[in-house]
Length: 93
Ligand SMILES: [Zn+2]
Image 1: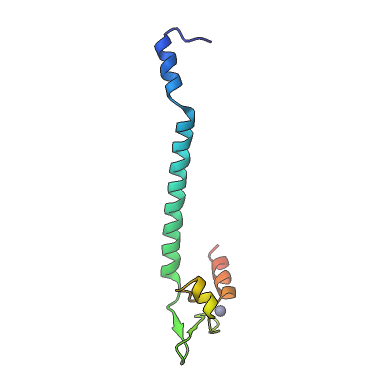
Image 2: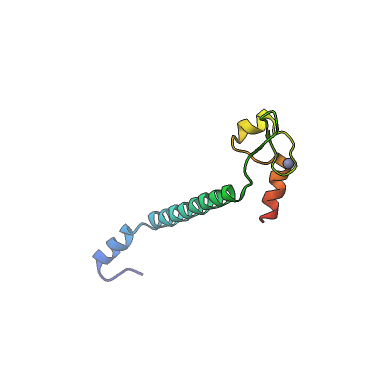
């Protein structure tokens, strides 16, 4: 169906549905990033304090196993070993 007013038709064409979709997608993504950042910050606040053994090695705050260098390199402020961390993450849902 052709619109009666040709200018109306032009305006409709200018409202690019792809731009709009992109805008929505961007907003979604921004919201997701904000949620993620808030979640990460909350996780950090909930984590136990870093603990060390008498030799100054960082130990898991849960099972007290010494965190290896590789683990600390991957996550410099790790406070839990990998199994405890995944347990902890699971417990948070
Ligand atoms: Zn552990």
